[in-house]
Image 1 (tube, one colour):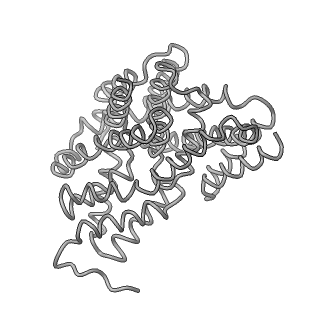
Image 2: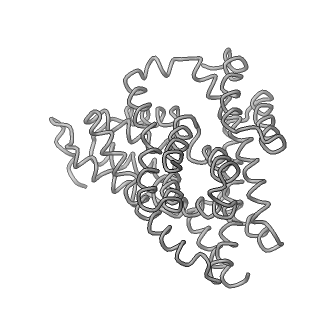
Amino acid sequence: MKAPDDLSQPPSVARIFLVFLKIGTFAFGGVYSMLSFFERELVEKRRWISHDEYIESIAIGQMTPGAPIVNSGICIGYRLRKLRGALASTAGQIFTGTITAILLAVFYMKIKEHAILRPIMKGIGAAVIGLLLSIIFTMSRKTLKDHKTLLVAVAAFVLLALFKVSPIMIILTAGAAGFILFRNKSR
Amino acid sequence: MSLLLLCWILFYINALTIGGGYAMLPLLQREFVDKHHWLTNQEFLDAIAIGQLSPGPLTVMNAFIGFKLHGLTGSLLAVICSYLPSLIIVTLAVKYYYAYRESEFIAAGFTGIKSAVIGLLAAVAVSLGNTSLVDPGTFAIALCSFACITFTRIDPSFIILGAGLIGAFFF
């Protein structure tokens, strides 16, 4: 095993970028594989942050809007090198994905009308529905724990699916309703 | 003008959705497909697939959408506008973490939002399902993909690629 980095100085901005580039490039498979990658790279291997700081960063990532994993990275980058560290971790983490998405976009638009793409995208589209259902299933098990949370979820579904209410209005209303419904329960 | 509008839409959606990249799908679908007709339901599905296939967070799908609408400029601006809200809000949250964490108000509001997001995602799944589940074959793929992703540890990217292969040979 490699010796942990010298901790008398926080890592340079370039090092932060490179480590998060590695995390963003090689951590396939969504949140969980990325989280374990975070822990291995940043806590165990490099000791940039302690385990508690890691847990705290994950928590902040979950409690802030946007992609949680990027947010946890911002959190860690900010602790290490303030705003420049936060920018370096974000850039590193999304770099490869963004390039890949752009390349796929170029390719997709070139052959979009080609006959071979249609059956492929038909299969992929069906798999994406399965993926969405799986996300819904997993989220439900974690979040819908009582009648009140279930009621909010069903109400949101009905308002969007049947009445075409704007989803942002539904989210804001659900947040406001949460203040009333879940206030005593939290913590 | 529509480039500015694209930036604004991505900025506000990323600033307001709690619960991960998937929580943004209902808002993205409303803005891009239903309201502005910049994408069809099929293209939106393709965008999700590409976001899932690219390494890193699902939100890199915004780079794909940006590219499709406005080329390279569109994709770069889409990326900046997607992560700018996070940069602002997270750095504030780190500074005021203890106040933020202890806030009963925020925790209660989030419980409401996270519950609603599940309902919204279900509505998106129904609407996209109407587009993509057209015959027994596509139904079967959706079911298998659900089961594999939920109950095994196989990477969703492989499931999606596998479904593409099945499509190429059997549809």
